[in-house]
Image 1: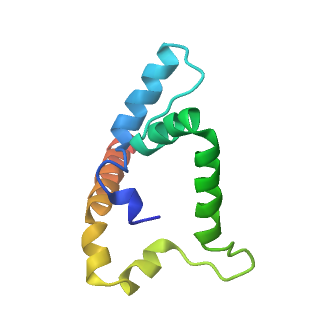
Image 2: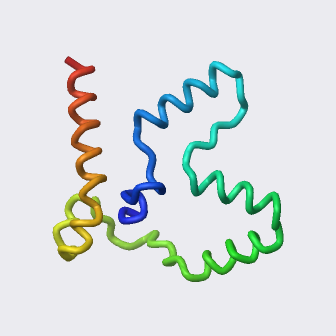
Length: 109
C-alpha cells in the first residue's frame, strides 16, 4: 500500500483532506469522498454494480492473506530492506510525512 499511497492522483495531501472535510461539515453533508479512486469506484458501482462486485471479489482473491498471529514490525524498520526503485517511487510520501511532522511540531510549540 505504501507505493500506491505515494502516487500522484492516488494520494491526497493532508491539507486537501482537511479542507474537504471542513467544507463538507460546513455544508452539513453526511459523506465526504476525497480521493479520485474513491470517486471513480462510487460511480462505477452506480453504473455497473455487478461488474464492480465481480472486480472487487477478484481483487480480494489476489490480495495477501491476513497476517494475524505473525510477527509484526513497523514499516519504518522494513523500509530500508526494499530496493532503490521502491525508494524512488515513495519519495513523495516521505517528503509529505516530513512536512506534516514539521507542521505538527510547530502547532505543539
